[in-house]
Length: 332
Ligand code: PEP
Ligand code: MN
Image (tube, rainbow, N blue to C red; front, top):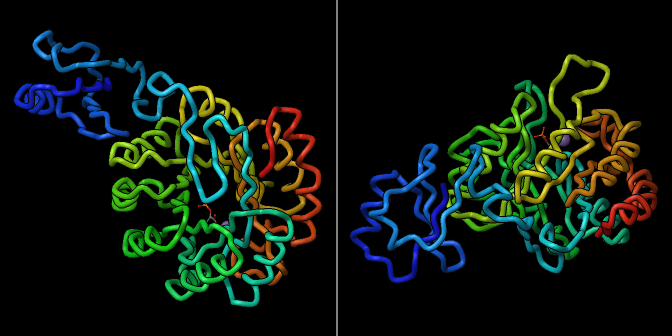
């Protein structure tokens, strides 16, 4: 249950309520908000005088639920807004990893030419093998941020573990929590303690409930700027890297109030399928798309098979407008 506390509430009674329900105590835009632990459906009359509004939740969704906050939350990023009532589908692109200054400058130049305002690139790569490229680390982060600033782009980059989460929070415009890092409480806690936008990716073996509960960790830490990213889950199928769960996307849109971003690149795993899948994602009427592109995918140090060339990216983008407008959206 979520409770909005009445202004001027008796502080002793409020403290008692917080203790009784082991409540998370938040200030959301000037409103004192308590999220009560457990599945509380009723509160004692004793507390009636300090309760302004109460929201009984039928599921484990709390702050992320549309029953609490009907409108999709809006995440503002420079001149672009994601979610809210904007009907924007924000196109985010860039390489899997930043590899060199030349590479990232070439990508940035093309993104600017295409009117794309947010660049993605990983500096701290969570790899399955210890012998794979782990990213350029802090030097890569500085180079990425410097390049994005020079080109007027916003930057999204991922956190691999909590050893560098503070550095990414300080320097990136959007913090990406990757599929493998989704359960890391150190990362979730640090992201909850800041107000920077966070893109939380769904783990590939994660149920929708677990996914949204991870988002609740960030929201209940006090950060309202959370976006959800579906990037494919593992199924019995082996011909594609993962299976993009569009049913899950429909669920997230219906029941949560968080902007939903789709990542067809990681789901498909092969560049040949990415354009069609991106159009399908666009037709879902989502808040954003995350597409990997590289000047020379064959030579990419990570996720080589799935990255589009910059020309392929340009061709794809040119096809999206009509698909987006058919579902009342605009690609920005
Ligand atoms: C990525 O975006 O490059 C990435 C590693 O994604 P995921 O966490 O979804 O595997
Ligand atoms: Mn990648």
